[in-house]
Amino acid sequence: MSEAKRIDGKAFAEGLRARVAAKVAKLKAEHGVTPGLAVVLVGEDPASQVYVRNKGKQTVETGMNSFEFKMPADATEDALLAKIDALNHDPAVHGILVQLPLPKHMDEAKVINAIHPDKDVDGFHVINSGRLMTGQEAMIPCTPFGCLMLIKDTLGDDLSGKRAIVVGRSNIVGKPMAQLLLDANCTVTIAHSRTRDLADECRRADILVAAVGRPHMVKGDWIKPGACVIDVGINRIDAPDLGEGKTRLVGDVDFASAQAVAGSITPVPGGVGPMTIAVLLANTVTACCRALGIAEPAA
Ligand code: GUN
Image (cartoon, rainbow, N blue to C red; front, side):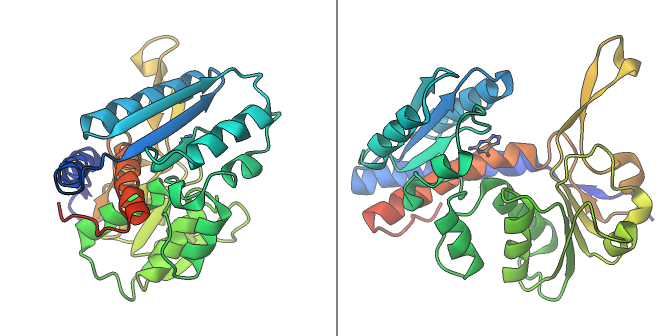
């Protein structure tokens, strides 16, 4: 078996951002509107600060308005809810994202569900989960939506009848990913920590999406020859081979053994990771067009 095709999420995300920028330019020229994305960061988690900075930078690079709000780690939940309420009513803001995780004293579900569902560009609001589940027009969570784009770009748009397995059942990735694959007429299995004979389940799948947060869990001999493997994991592990105290990012899939069996596979980094913000920008354009009742421009 020859080596798997590497699915280049970085390049796909660049293309997607260019299409978003083209749509933004048309919205400005034809409708005089600039899509706006508001990001709220509570506290000083270093990883979250990096995410938020990158989101702001890429929002501006695609021609959209970026609004950033920082609140201290000890801000009250009421203060955050008041901020969200103001953004819900601000016509210049078409998308709202509250960076997760939130400080422990806040109720994450309550905060997310305070965002107006039509501005919920993360697609985490219970209304959007329900809309996705029932086939209604929804905001779709960015990471699984990005995975679906990579799968279709690799295998073609018609996924009918393919066996798919999603390893992981989070609300943010696993469950919406399974729903998107089901909507694409795949036969879908959702596997998790209690799944019996997980390797056997995985070996049946034409499409395998790993989203469990466990470094190198999926081995090459778990993979059906020729399968499309999407690795959502971003795990930082010690890398003494790089020097003392050094670390590296690895996925949930053991890339070295998997690439010898899979037909196509996303690397970590450079696979799914770069897709998330690009899809967030695309979702913001979608939210803007829906808010104004105009058709989304072709890119
Ligand atoms: N924290 C890490 N990833 C995400 C994301 O996609 N959305 C939000 N809101 N918070 C995150």
